[in-house]
Amino acid sequence: MESLLSSFRLVGAPLSCEPYGHGHINRTFLVVTDAPRRYILQQINTRVFSDPAGLMENISAVTAYLSARTRDPRGCLRLVPTAEGGSWLRAPDGGCWRVYDFVEDSVCLQQPETEEDFYQSAVAFGGFQHMLADFPAGTLHETIPNFHNTPDRYRLFRAALASDRCGRAASVEKEIAFVLMREEQAGALQRMRESGELPLRVTHNDTKLNNVLLDAATHRPLCVIDLDTVMPGLAAYDFGDSIRFGAATAAEDERDLSRVSMSLTRFAAFTRGFLGACPGLTPRERETLPLGAYTMTLECGMRFLTDYLDGDRYFAVAREGHNLDRARTQLALVADMERKREAMAAAVRACEAGE
Ligand code: ADP
Ligand code: GN1
Ligand code: MG
Picture 1 (cartoon, rainbow, N blue to C red):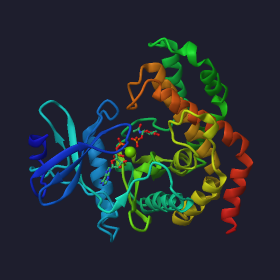
Picture 2 (cartoon, protein in one colour):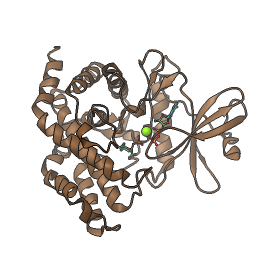
Picture 3 (cartoon, rainbow, N blue to C red):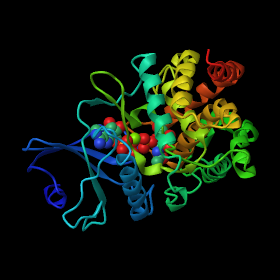
Picture 4 (tube, rainbow, N blue to C red):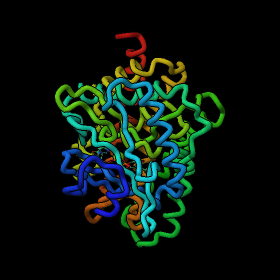
């Protein structure tokens, strides 16, 4: 680690480097130097992101664009350059690494502590999308092709099911049937994208609450992080993925499903924050926000189930059956959203009417 860190222009000499955070994809470390300064060191997961150069080009361009439009120095991620002036490093063993300034005096929540926290995260993600409205989307690399193409996720799910490489399918028949029964509705958003009735925007695509930092003292939005999946997408993806995670009344990997539901009051609070910070959405886009929540949740549940069938090779797991537990919470949320479909639509309409 020391020789790796010596290739980045850090202020001070590194004192410690410890695993950090709760991300499922990259390997993240907190680095402390004697200056004293703190940094985030990350190894990019190149099994997930096969083009690290393209990915880092995206992040360099997006952070440069945002920092030119943000007064607060903690308002956007800041890459620390390498000794050669690059934005990332390929280590001799092939590992790809980058370093960010640590955003000080911030909190990263795994669940909202209050409804207000969730509202503030909506302001952050809505504002992020709004600020990138004029970013030249055509210059972005597609870091994971078909990331939120739900019909394509069904294709991958069926492939995992057909090969059943760990012999786990027989024990999850109920979950498999739940997913397969919903294929038609799950494809609706993608069909609207393809027909052109919804505009393509620059979206974050992974808007869970732990991908935003709030100010530690005020819990006001500070900084949107985890920019690996910033790509052209639909507004409903960002809205929906936030609801999936933050409007859930239990953790993403909760085992007691009786605790899992989608909170309508949180849904309404998020809608207020998101629409307020991102006022340019078309009426049709606003109408599809509940469908976005439904689709992102079903898609994520299916992705966890796919990975469970595949032998847990994509998402980091901390225990036996972790991906199955995660899949089950998402499917429980989907069932709850089906019960609350009309109430979600009414909450969006109420918000539009300024109620
Ligand atoms: P992953 O793709 O694995 O989710 P993230 O980029 O989201 O990785 O980082 C993992 C965690 O590290 C975040 O949830 C957050 O707690 C923390 N983190 C990342 N970047 C910073 C930063 N610049 N300042 C403070 N904390 C950060
Ligand atoms: C992953 O990287 P992280 O932990 O913020 C995943 C998201 C999933 C999420 C589920 C690149 O997000 O798509 O919704 O886990 N990111 C990638 O918690 O696949
Ligand atoms: Mg993350």
